[in-house]
Image (cartoon, rainbow, N blue to C red; front, side):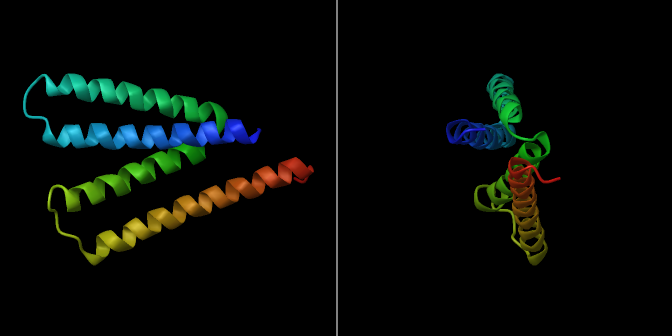
Length: 120
């Protein structure tokens, strides 16, 4: 995959992660029935970009990042926007998520390099 397509694919990952956080935020503040219309629209947009990202990148990598950003973003949203307490347990498990996503991405990159060189 060329650099332009790779950048486009990672852009889709960023967009799906962003829209996931938008609809989760809306989910938390919805107070009347018509708010749900916006939530559904953002969920559809979110899954559109998730599907596009999976067309160009390995689904496992995309989903791991999507899930980690959603989990971390939701936890941080709870802390900073909804005034939930931050404790050591939350910090430790958020760090584990970040390390896991970085490790998965590094492993995927190593596999791509091996494939380019014809090594199995």
